[in-house]
Amino acid sequence: MVGCLIFFGWLGTRTNWLMFAGICNIMAGLALFFFGLVCLFVYGQKERKLGNAYPVRRSLISLGLLLFNFPAAALALYSVQYVMSTSVATVQNNSSFEVIDLVLTERDLSYPLPPIGPGQEITEYFHFKYEGSVDYRLTLNGSIKEGIMFGYVSGIGKNATLAIKKDGTVETGK
Image (cartoon, rainbow, N blue to C red; front, side, top):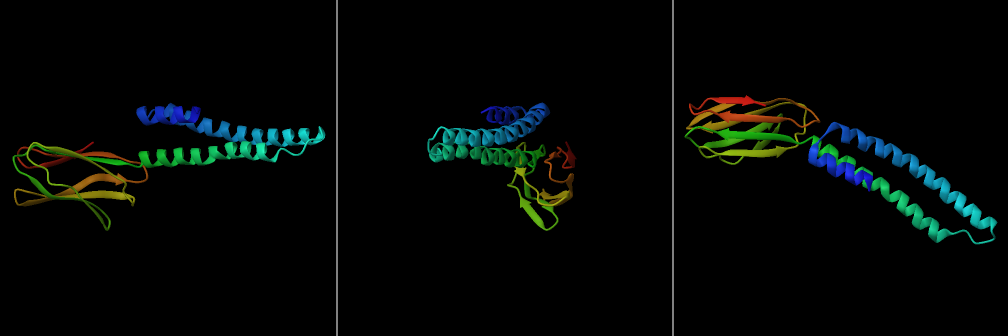
């Protein structure tokens, strides 16, 4: 429950202290998991000393609840990694011409973007596969323009803006 609150709070705010709180929560959960296993064992031994049969059904249900936390934590960690590795590309067309054939390229992979009309802006999300720079190539009023959109990407997502000015020049920035 606490882990879900931390995760959704981080998802909405992306604050570092919530990420730290999530890591602490996972560590505390791991300690409590082992404590729960000890409690289950002690409970079973106590029932046997009282002359009762070992509570297999109750123990299995409790063990299942304890084990359920692992896939939940793994899903949260995977989701955080996925969100943090998302790169955001924004393209602003301030010219009076349509931008066509816009493609982002990293090594041997290409990511085509839709045409962008005059005065329009688009934002696309990417999960780049390789480390290194991501280049752009576009056609504006019959002229091919190319350059670097993302200077260097790795496992952590980046934000970049490609602005086409009124005179047709292209500027990249953050």
